[in-house]
Image 1 (tube, rainbow, N blue to C red):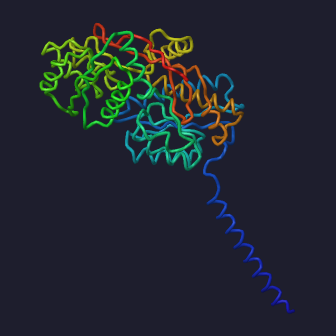
Image 2 (image 1 turned 120 degrees about the vertical axis):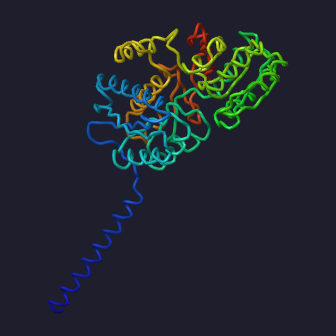
Image 3 (image 1 turned 90 degrees about the vertical axis):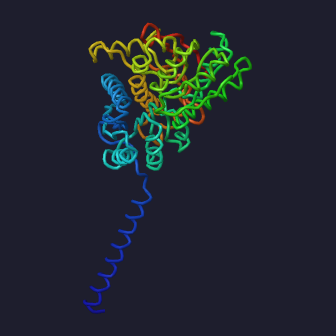
Length: 397
């Protein structure tokens, strides 16, 4: 065989090997898991939330709570000798931007987990991205349906309406002696529609509670005289309004104008200084169900409050500060119990969390990765301020 023929055959063989190698590399690239266990000395956790825009009031405190938790964990030596780094970005409360930020966290920042978004809508956009990449996503605020159903990497640590409302109804019936309830729903508000239905479903299981009126309004309405006239004739013990504070305050002003003395009850949509500012004396006695209160604090919560006050010139923490803090602490706890910082490993430990003593309450994960939290804080307006009315226990089993 001539030298030229040998050279040609060698060249063909080399090209074939090279082509085969490239093909294998491409196949490996396509089949490889998008997320890998973190290398180096840091564990990156992404903050998904708004720092500007209409829902920054949820995002900013969530981030503050996350940073507090990371500082505390790092001061104690970190996890497996690695320090936690909070990677932050501003999604501006926009779903498309939320998706982009989630992609960036995974593909460029190589995060191990993501905390957020505090809102249900953006969480539902981000969850499929995190699930596909094998990155744990834990929302510290989303309460609506369709979140954890996305997959086994998706969690949340917030008190769900489906847990809170039955506990409130039981308290109303046994402790306050309420029997008759009037429901008012803002039917162009998904949150309000969902919360009202949750209340109806829960009330149906308590024989002593009767829904005597079921009225509809809309976000942006100003005149509620017709609805209050209908409700007044039913003589309810309490008015459930499932919407937000602006309409809630105006409804109560109309109720007092017509001589209806029943208090209002709602979810965290009523919990705002604006509710009191807009409603004035008419909202005295109105109640809001939350997953956190600074009053009657458990030891862990009391410590968190004092540290927070020291960092924020005496300011008290709120619900999202606490839930952001707990989210990072839950992730750290799962990593320690799993003895791994790989999300594919520690997600199993996170799913098995039982009676974790968080600053926003005791937290257990159900089989579907939905949290049960206790106690529920029922706040009410007294002398122009929201104060604690009761800590309502929630069944943990």
